[in-house]
Image 1 (cartoon, rainbow over the protein chains, first blue to last red):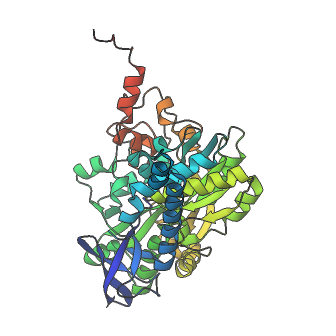
Image 2: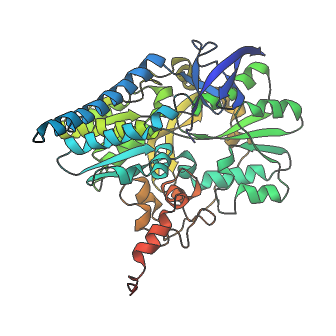
Image 3: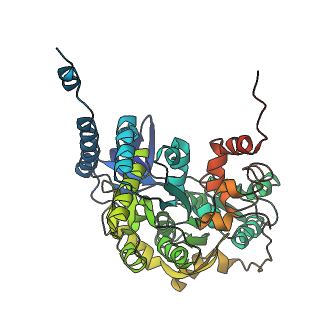
Length: 92
Length: 376
């Protein structure tokens, strides 16, 4: 019910004083109101719930969260034995 | 799709599980508040990937599930009127009231329409000036701005044949209600990301402080949920209890200010009944008195109807995190999505319906069947 999907703002238009947009979700384009996201502009990703953009996705924050996950993954890999070290321990 | 695919990366999911395993020293019970999160957890099997001892229990955050039976009966009685076009989100149509569901009523000739957005009702009202168009305005804080905008635009454009039947619920009072209960088992929460996209998370700070529980506002993709669990476990292990924001790409502490402003100008907070749970103080919205002309409950005097819930159904305990669908004697047998007995089976986001959709009733039957004789 609280499902909201991120989509890309393709174009803006006015409908009887409402700020509307065509928003692309994968292969589907639907209309959404931008009245609650005055900062959203063409090219931005907005989170759409029942025909209304309720948030503009913050690209920097998205990258930062993802970076944290990537770093954790790299740390996990660092803890695993490195192939060179394994072969180095073998008697020559 | 951007902002979806990268949060389904199995390599990073595995690393997150490993990190949870590394830091965890004892069992913890964590509740995901939102039905959308429950759906994602069961769909992706996240509860089964987590280390043993991290138990996820499913919260009350499914608005369709918790819409009280008497409200569904009111909807039924309004929708049956020949002068009404009744509009609703699709998932409300299948929910059984005391006299069947709205789909059945529709098949008997009532004009009941599924809409994508509340704003669609404005178009329908303008095209049908001789009818009263009633929208079933259910939902949590996430949906309130959309429902508020329908009334706001109708008032602005002078459309006077549209009204809303309001059954709005609010999350923070429900969390307080759960935490106050003596049987509460929940030690930390994954907070509702899209509710907080609208409302921000200031309201959760006193809840976290008062009951000493970590609350991590969390998104809906598998990696969001796993990272939310990791952040919660980190706090639990450190003895900390604060509100953190995993879903920072979507929300900040203040939420969506224009949306909150319109919601506050149209709605006031009232006590609200939650199906399977009971009345929770100050846990819902109703339209303010100056918008009474748009309030379907006032426009159509609906008699108070006596309702009956199933005596076997344990959905109330499931919604409070005390029990799981598997603990119910009729889960997947007498009670299925086609023949739901209670709140948590009526919507796809209910815990029972999610368990059923992803085959967990089959696991239950297998676990309970007498052990097969091994083949020779």
